[in-house]
Amino acid sequence: KNEVEQSPQNLTAQEGEFITINCSYSVGISALHWLQQHPGGGIVSLFMLSSGKKKHGRLIATINIQEKHSSLHITASHPRDSAVYICAVEGGGADGLTFGKGTHLIIQP
Amino acid sequence: KAGVTQTPRYLIKTRGQQVTLSCSPISGHRSVSWYQQTPGQGLQFLFEYFSETQRNKGNFPGRFSGRQFSNSRSEMNVSTLELGDSALYLCASSSLGTGVNEQFFGPGTRLTVL
Image 1 (cartoon, chains in turn yellow, orange):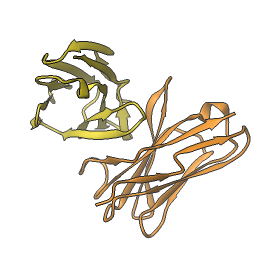
Image 2 (tube, each protein chain N blue to C red; image 1 turned 180 degrees about the vertical axis):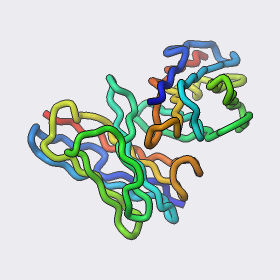
Image 3 (spheres, chains in turn green, red; image 1 turned 120 degrees about the horizontal axis):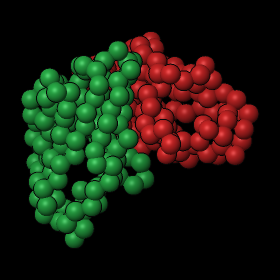
C-alpha cells in the first residue's frame, strides 16, 4: 500500500510570497496528481505528471521519481490561491488514487 | 462543454436507509471514478467504471456499489446506511481512465446520515 505524506499540513503566507508544498510517497507510481479544493468542496485538477516538471501560469509542479517526491510551487501568491492542495498517486500496487491528507494554504493580503 | 454534474447536491438520510447518487460525466468521457471524503479519513477511492465495467475497486464494504450506463452516466448506491457514511461523495470523469488522462471532478454530493 502506498503511503502519501504531504507537508506542511497548514501554511499561512503573505501575498506575493513563493510557496512550496511537498509530497512524498513510499512505493513506485505510474502518475502523480496535484489537486486544488476550495471551501464548499469543488476539486480542480492542477497537474498530472509522471516525470520532470510542468508549469501552468504561476503554478509549477516537479517530480523526482528516484526520490519518490514531488513539489508544488506557487509564485507571486495571491489570496485567491487560498485553498487545500492535495497530492494523489496512482499505481504502486493500489487500485485507483491514493491521496495525501492535504495542505491547507491561506494567503493573507 | 458542460462539466461533471452530480445529483443531488445535498441529502439527509437516517441509519438503515439506502441512497443512490448520480454522476453525469463530461460528454465523451468513458471513465467515471467515485471518491468519499470525510474529515477523519480524507479522500478515499471507491471504484472506477469504464465502458460500463467496474475496472478498479477500493477498500470499502459491499454496502457500497455502483454501476455505469451505456451513456457513461454512473450511479453509486449505499445500502444500510451507517452514521460513518456521512461524507462528501465526489465523482470524476476522464476520457480514457486514470493514469492516462487528468480527471475532472464534479461538485460532490454531501450526504448526512442521522
